[in-house]
Image 1 (tube, rainbow, N blue to C red):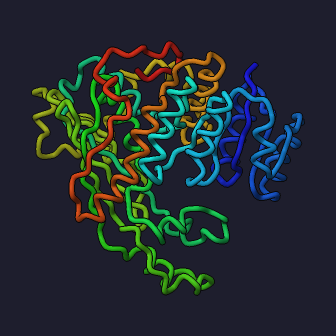
Image 2 (image 1 turned 120 degrees about the vertical axis):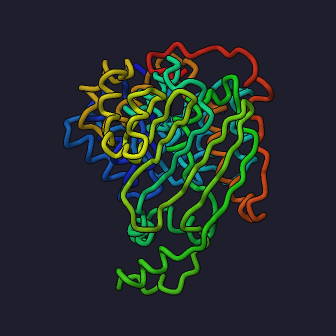
Length: 406
């Protein structure tokens, strides 16, 4: 049975811990860690109230890393993700890395270098790659139903104004990032599923990007209009643009558009869109449009077919959702937390190539510092490094995992 450590027990960490303890078997958590004592105590309580053995618990990273483990869930603050992953890899531990953007390109290169020196992969825990819709569309793309895919887009459309504003009270990392940075700070929810569809790092790669940021008004207005107890933030100058748009070109000719949209009022969406020569999928109205006589009859009043994506999912549901849908339903984020955790645990147990490997992790996380650089230069194109050193164009060994996304 594989042994795991777990570090970071903010809101996300606790949610993932609950999903593990309540819904997934066949592993052992042997050590838990957070820099804050109260969060360590909260994590311990989740074991105690379930009648489970409480793992070794500490606020010291050094003590935590002294425990023998096979894998490590990294759920700590954004800035710590890559350094913790590298430290784990150097100790022979396969890290499962919670999502977020990198801070420097050098960190991404160091992550890849560590893998190539140690042979220990890191796996990015990008749960959106396992979304029911995303996997259904991926299956349909692989079957050729969309024809030649030429363009994809997606976004992190999520009103986070309250969460960001109370960053100090919640001991959360987003506030300091929105004050000090201006970038596509959370690219992987939308990019991950698109990268799999476009075979990024497996016969294709991202070449360059241009990023553009709107002015910054949303947080300032929200704080001054709605929050009386945050007077210290009323005159804060936020650097993060309300809307950040990133355009990416790929070696095989496709384009990708990513949108960060977290500080204006709106409903949640990931805006997942796939455009091909035979058809398209649009998440915003959950509809699929094919190049058929029947669909073209509704060219100007397609609204009558909004939500026909449900039929698509019924007819083309991905095998993972057929097998695990009942177990995943009712777990975190509509089941995708369950599936990504199962995928990671299987990776560690079999010491296999992860479904989202180190090259994917570095490439996707690199969008953040590259977008920051482009925005500073008025949207100038910035080259995206080839972290695979040419291996993207060669046949690559495919993961044999049940939860593989190849």
